[in-house]
Every structure is written in structure tokens, then in C-alpha cells.
Image (cartoon, helix red, strand yellow):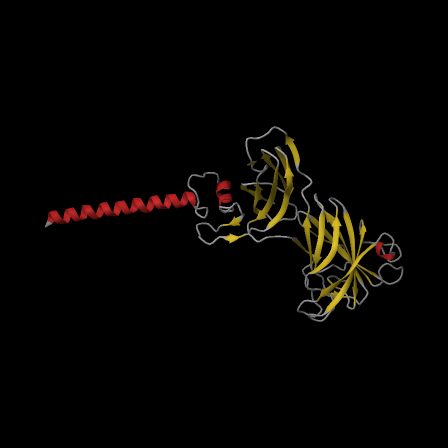
Length: 349
């Protein structure tokens, strides 16, 4: 009897060991082949983080660590720059205009949409007339400021606007006639309200307000009761409420630093890293290819396009200025032909 018991225990131990080996082998195999499970063979912590950011097809995603439900990065057609979040605490009459400046960073900007505060009733429709000028639209009392004369201004279009769900609140997003802002330049904008008055933030007198991200700066603070005439009143700081939405052109700061034909695609680690507020990224291309180099935040949202176009064989360098972004981890992803690679960088302010 005892002999049979010993043989049973030995057999049970053998089955248990075989099961453990089989399970462990399966786990190692899944660990190596499944991008949602950390790969023990990768020691570089940045590459380990980047592995969670790319799916099997090279599409950037965020994989919550050790989970099986990936969060897919949303497609971002436009970037959003908030103006004063409000709520508005002041307002004007129909025919008044709000003035603001748009300043582009290192790339050309096309402002395509926005929202703004108005005195309209909830869900009511109204319109705004959009004017632009080269250089600032701000500053100067009636009689001498940019809003005192139509000289230098270009009428773009009159566009329809729909108020949001709150009376005297912020409108829904509306489409602008495209406002092009060349890299490094300033374009002044005036919105003249038809049928309703502007709503804005600010009373009394004070300085202008500046809102910016890595691509675009918005300076706001003027309102006029009779724009483009030498009569009426000029008010500051009357700050635009709402958001500006824009798209960016191909980066202009990509520099070819080597024409020797590389062996293959490569995305180098940025330097310095950590950085504040700018860092440099190098990449190599073995032959003429269409490629993109984009930066994403930890939620998978695109925050910058550093390169986008056709490049010949060589080694390239691009500088990213993260002024206006919050401290934290970001990811930059290079995609070209069948190549895709993502690395992590750290902004510390």
C-alpha cells in the first residue's frame, strides 16, 4: 500500500512539473510575441515603453501595462489651442469686433476653425465677418490703432455660427476661411459680430493675455465698438473665450547632416533627454521614402509633426521645441514604408 502511495506521489509530482514547464514555456512564448506583454529580452526601458506604443501593423497605440485591451490613439486632424476658458464676464453689442494675434512657431500654420463667446440665445444662429492683416491687430486707441482704419486689412468672408447650449455662452465650433500664418510671422485677426454682440473675459484695463503651445501663440485682449473707423470706443483687456483649431505644415527644421547611404532605417534616441524645453532627434533613411516623425503625449494624442514628406537617402536632424507643453513623458514615432519605431522622451520643467 505504502509502495503504491509513493508511486502515486512521484507520478503526481511529475505531472505537476510537466504542467508548470508547459505553462511557463507558453508564457515565455506569449511574452516574446505579444506586444501587450513586456518582453523580458528587451532591457532598454525606453524601448520597453515604446514596445507598448506600437501594434503589429506599426500603428501607434497605448497599451496599458499587462492588459489585453489596448487604447487606440485617436486620429488627430487638427490641434486645439484654448483661449481663456471663461466663462465670459463681460459683453458688447451687435457690430462690435474682437481682435487677436496669431503667431506661428517653426512651421506654417493654417487656422481652420474656432469657437467664441457671444450674447446669442442658446442654439441660435448668427454670423461673423472675418478680417486679417499682416502683423499685429492689437493696441492703440481709436484714431491710431490697427482697428481704427480699414487700411492693411483683408476681408476674408462672412461665416455662419451656431450658439452652444447656453445663452450668452460659447458657440459651437465653426469653420473659418483658412487663415494662413507663415512660420515665425504674426497675423492679426478681427471678428465682427453680426446680429449679436461678442462675449469676452476681462474688465477695466490691463495687459493682454497670451496662450501658446509648441506650434502656435494666441495673443488676445482688444474689443472695439466701431471697428475700422475713427469713432467709437476701444477696450482692453477684452479677452477672446473659446478655442482656436489649426493644422500644421511639413516641418521646416529638418536638416540633412549626412548623404552616405545608410544600411537601413534608424530612429536615434533624442538628446538631451530629459530636456527643457527643446531636444534634438536624428533619423536615417536608406533610400527615397515617404516618412513621418510625430510626437504623442502619454494619452496617445498627437502634439507635434516634426517631419512629413518624401526624403532621399541620408541622415537627418530635427529640433523639437516643447515650449507650452506640460512636463511628462512623450513618445516620438517614425514611420516609413514598412518601418515603424517609437522612442520615449522626457520633458522636465
